[in-house]
Image (cartoon, rainbow, N blue to C red; front, side, top):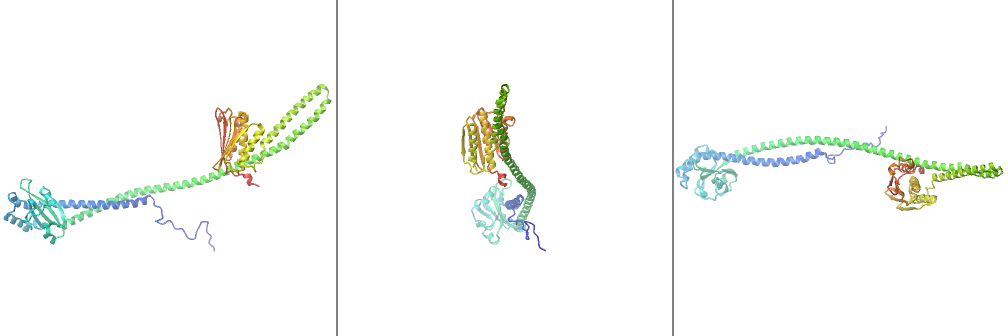
Length: 483
């Protein structure tokens, strides 16, 4: 059994767009951008918080250690208020404290500085070194601390045994006053301190990360809801737009059908008028002509009548002849008016010239013309409508304006014809055109123009009238398409 595929179907299903080529919606764009911002913020905030924790823990540990050491040794340093060096008894008391009390287990090394950078107690006792920044701050009564790499000159011996130590400078004050009589520089192991710092940093990183992640998820949820709403609205708008486009296409097709129907009706109307003209010429006009010929023979016979009857008969025959002659003239004018010349073979300019020439031959009035860029070819409905408008507008100008300053102007626009017929008459109120029965000519012109999809306007002031017509040059002739 053979397979039968529907139109547009395929044996191989099409794959949907990949993640690379698929357009990213607002939620995806936000998730990527906010994730990058989140990671950067986590790094910056984590580093800053970790640094603050390190500094804070170090300073708190140093302050506690300084207070602890000061309570133990400050009593044995009071002799420095009177002398430059410690006595042997004071040194022995300090040695006992560092060897027999828990203080010695907490302190890795200690120096006691006197004024001017003199080491009064410690491994470098008796030597003088330059006063560093941390020691200078201690002489001002501040506790200074830092994790030292032991690169100072007085720490050569410590450098050989330790890699890093917590270095603390603590002021030793005279009892009962704020006077600093010495500075104690001592070192502690950084292992427990670094362990506490690391633990605090990890906890802070976890806390900051959890807070940022929670904020990220909350904002992502809000943005995703908004993105979904926008997507649904876009889909709805897309469906409405597609429906509107379909309606526009349908309306355009209906408009085209209506316009073609109107064009066909107009052309059929011209054919009817042509038949009416032929009918008038071949029917009633011939009968009236025959009646006029018969009147001539009747006139000859009235001479045989007696005098009173002859005069009355001659008067009646003269009245009949006048009536029949007027009727003949009216029928010929009507036949000429409703019959169009052969416009198929004429160009648009020749069509307009023919309408102007017919008006001049009929009325003897002068008409100025001006053409600009007229195309050689134009649809037959356009030529018929232009011919009718020019003839009707010039006829109105002759009747109501006495043929003063008559002008016909035409120029080609983009796929359109602009036609103007003007005169120099007294003018009128254009707003009453559609209301007055005497303006049926204007109404007929408007209907002809609008049936082709054109525009009709009349401008008139206290002096002069201008009829302006826009006609599309893309109208199809239905009668030209039919055999």
